[in-house]
Image 1 (tube, protein in one colour):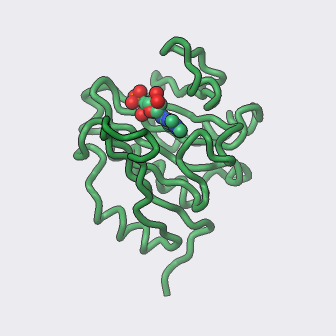
Image 2: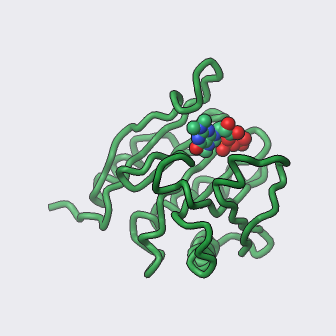
Length: 183
Ligand SMILES: CN(C)c1nc(=O)c2c([nH]1)N([C@@H]1O[C@H](COP(=O)(O)OP(=O)(O)O)[C@@H](O)[C@H]1O)CN2C
């Protein structure tokens, strides 16, 4: 028998088609709830470092859409890691996989219920990996989650990991919104 995961997760793909509304480009591909089905999916799809710029992969708890507006996300935010150009070859794929294993392996200990999902954006200027959590105002919970994420992704100490609420990100006046928390 297959090894069940604590939660069922859904894999979404964002295809950058400028002729369509943003949410029309976000496609739910499949769901999985066992370790074996996770690996079957992971080994079946392209590595993040090989997908076109402008595209995203998202892995969210089943029932949560990878959108700010979803009721599970609306009061939350994200821990964001921006990876520079040369990191795409070495770090991007490894960091994304590490985060996925942390996610489906419920590695956030007593804060697993606050985890919504993870997103990786492949972009010309800098690739981004983010972990979405449910409550931007639970400072201790956010910091505990961020610390585990930074530690488990073996990021070099100078990599700054910042948290912004989706309310801030979605209404950003300037591109450099001041982070709510950093680890
Ligand atoms: C329901 N709805 C419209 C809506 N709901 C959303 O949840 C949502 C959006 N729109 N997003 C739109 O994509 C642009 C790029 O963000 P990016 O994160 O790809 O980052 P880049 O600027 O492409 O690096 C965002 O500026 C935003 O327009 C992003 N986003 C998460």
